[in-house]
Length: 456
Image (tube, rainbow, N blue to C red; front, side, top):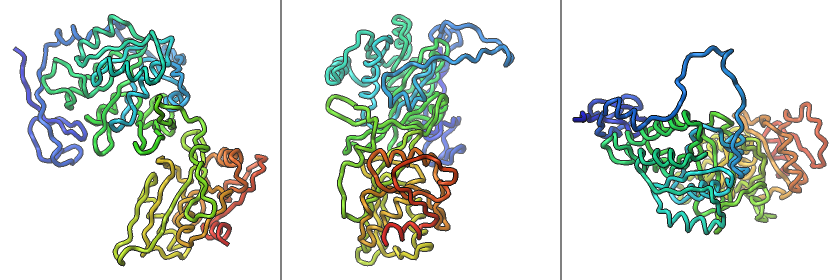
């Protein structure tokens, strides 16, 4: 007779407690302790259901370990390869999270169908085989090496894997998979953690890469305990506004590459299209003569692109508290830049509503956008337009100085390639700058210098 044990897990951090508490002792979250019923099996039974062929490990010295570079799997998708760090690493466990309906399953299915020479097993726990077939027909891609199975039982999934010997496994989604060793319902903290750990063991012992699709909570984090993100090798976030056609694949954690990379896609009726040059798509609108619109040269990962910053400044309604709203930009950083404008440049915005928007529904974290943000806010406040052929980049410090940004050559080259005639850059970035470009480069040291140049 199996022993039944009731434990409590924190739904926020995964901390385990033998009794219920109103507040988690690990993370301090209130009301997050959830009861889970766990059934412990004998070690022999667990060994029978979770056995994989592997060589027993033994301690080695660093000199005995061979550090040969394993070839990555080409995903036949430049954006996906860029975010992964050059391709999919064998024996890796990748987790892709995103809001419902954003296109996670479409992205993974489309990528899988492109891998014509790789035997792939797609395990679906949410959709039927007929639904996947209809989606594949809409994508217009066929692949005979793509195997589909609709299963949620973890032990049955491993049986299908042993019978088919795939080179890549995709599980959609990890919250629907359950193990019979646990009596808790699928999607619970104990089920998600146990299933993810078993899949990780399979990936490492067999050398087969596995891609997991995960749900996210209303706060935007991966559903399940935080330990799930520590188990996997790579965490990718697929984000974007459903009202916009652009989707961004962003790396949050990557043991085999940079976490500053992002891939940009465009949602079309026939699937997701790679956007190799996002600057041209983000600058399609013509705002000649309109105030509050400024073009900024930003860097995300190794990719430079130009993006439009829009601002609207108006008098606070009914003399109440002014509103501060930012879409695609950190609201706290915008408040800091407004304080710099008032203290260092002398512009009073305390009784003004300020609205900021990054065009295209993108969210950019590059501090090089600071100069464009304050310039767009001032442009709207003064109702004076910035020249359309002018591009800006630079980080604003608390003293009102324009601080240098990284990879200034790539920013300048991108602006010149898209036909801009002038770019405003931090003066300290030009020390030792030897690149020969035709675009006019305007160095500035303070925000007051930039304002005189733009609005005089």
